[in-house]
Length: 372
Image 1 (cartoon, rainbow, N blue to C red):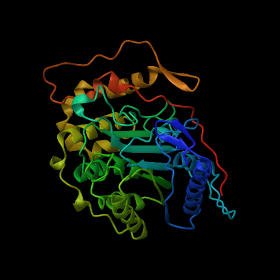
Image 2: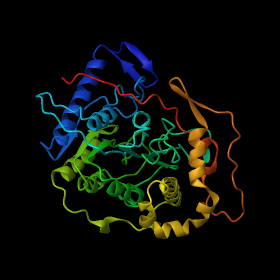
Image 3: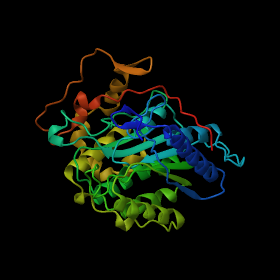
């Protein structure tokens, strides 16, 4: 029985906290076993999900942010199993979030931590033609949100500007963006926020990813280090029944990844390729390895590079917001001017003032829970 509506998408009853605590405990246990070397990889099937939850706010069906909590515990050497098994501290944690909604809570909790790299691929707008009026939930995760002053480049956002994104776009962004960074970062622990709502048939996602593709996204990550995968979104039971087992098979038996599956770039939607390259340009100052992975594309997008002084734009985006208590408030400064030169062939929202507004970031503390 629902006793109280906490927010537009949060309903609470007498068992809500206990369920969230158990979900947190399952994630901590799974991560501890992996980090201690008792198992190679782990999967967590738990509800409620976590990646929208802040330290002091529940939202988006999420009550506690277990994935960010486990990343912090791993860095601090505080992961422990219920039977007393203790995992040593790790220096580098990679969080990969392929839920169709941006993990705003996870980003906020890892915003200024250089030891944790957070990568999210998600939808940004309901429609490219209407993006000024209506963003896709939760409306965060812009490509220029790259982390706090101590951790520039630790936040990597790839927001899709249009719906109906499918397999070619996801595989291309994996090889052009995520995997070069992951190989360079050399994570000791990989946490995956596995939301399957970008799959074809999901009632909320509006994308066209094949359910069986998710295993191909997980395989190359499993070759880079130990993986703990936790279930996030996904609102079609048939899709979940197809997609989740492919991830399990990828972790149970991870053969060498076949790069021949990589589609040629011209199979991507033009808007999606533009989205990928905007994120590449935003991250190039912090991840030079992206230059080698995208050499030919960088030449093709040379005019976009001339339009955007990415480093100064990122710095201005971060500095335009000041911390006031638990909220980040925009300074009253003049907006950046967009270059309207006639020789620009790429129409990019990256130079638009509204697109550059980062989400308010709550203090980077973590929720705690007793392991059951």
